[in-house]
Amino acid sequence: MGKTFNELAQDLRDYIVDKHSNYRGLKHMSLQRYNNLTVSMNSKRYGQPHVIIRVGISEAAFSFPYVNKIDGGLGMDERFVMQWIGMDTTIVSLDAQWKTIKLAELDNS
Image (cartoon, rainbow, N blue to C red; front, side, top):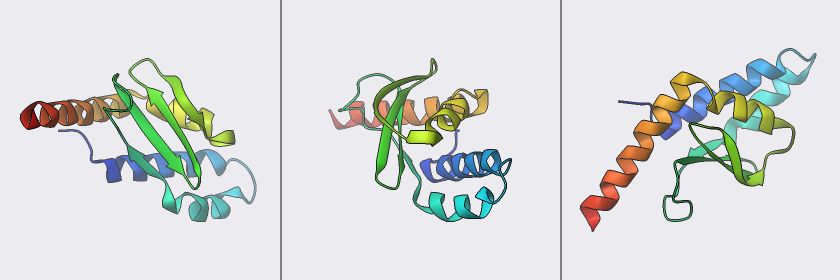
C-alpha cells in the first residue's frame, strides 16, 4: 500500500526544505512556510491521474506518471514539486491513492 496524503505531504515538505537548504538562510524560513502544505486528489474535477498540491494560497494540479501541470501555479516551488512527483517512489504512492479513490467511486455507484 502506498503512503497516505498526509505522509506524502510530509515527504514533499521535507524534499522542498532540503532543496532550499542549499541556499543560505532559507532552510529555517522554509520549515515555517511549508507547515500548511497539503496533497490531495479530486477525480470529479480532473478525470486523469493527478495530484493537487496546496502551499498557502497557491494551488496547482499535476498529472502523473508523466509529470505535466494541469492547472494553477506554485511559483518558485513548482520545479521542486515536479521533481518530487517524478520520483519513482512518489509515483507508486500517488498511483495507489488514485486507484483507491477510483475503487471507492465504483463502490458508491
